[in-house]
Length: 117
Image (cartoon, rainbow, N blue to C red; front, side, top):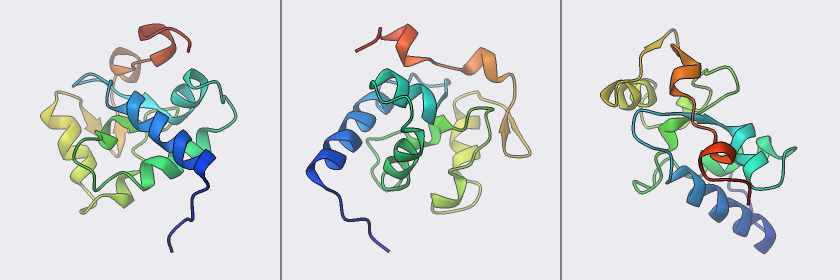
């Protein structure tokens, strides 16, 4: 089922993708941190929707976006059930039982790294 995007939502999704493209290799962030950075702290679910629509775009490193405790909740939207984990592990991020290990070490907070927009 395709989500029909309003122009406002499309713009928000585009802003999400801009932030995700800035996540460094070997680092992860979460839906809430992206929403907060974009000035929409209560919109983490909408960030998730944006990520669900982005997994086929090779310019968006969607594998670097996890939930607030490091779980690979977006893994089901990749072409294989293990693709998200495999991509993170190629970047040096250890994953066990669908959860990023040493999450604090790998966490990239756009509000701190980029400054609040």
